[in-house]
Image 1 (cartoon, one colour):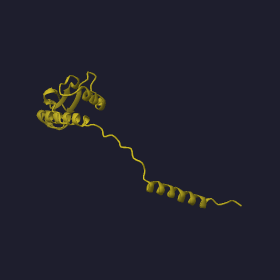
Image 2: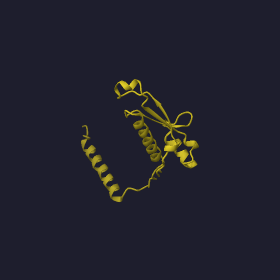
Image 3: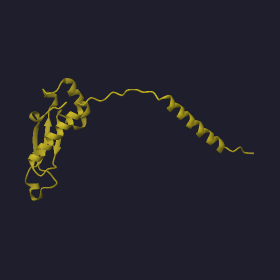
Length: 132
């Protein structure tokens, strides 16, 4: 599933630390992206519940999914990074978890385990010296 969230993301800028030289204290290059996924028309109710569960640590008290970037030196670069990160996060969270197929150990595996237990037991029996 590939959902493009770009039209529904709200952006906020702030001054960032890191690279940027003398501009770092003057230019707001850090970008924060917020997405109200509960009000989104792109997702079903089931998908919204899935996001709420899987991305709980990234959701604010207001119920907004928050992603921040200050890696690039430009605001536009950070904006593109925020969009990419958010799309990636949401698309990965919506991938259904594979169900585990229960299997039984093979007969050979059981025999191997039992024979190794027997050998170990015999080795320990030999170590036990009778005290006379």
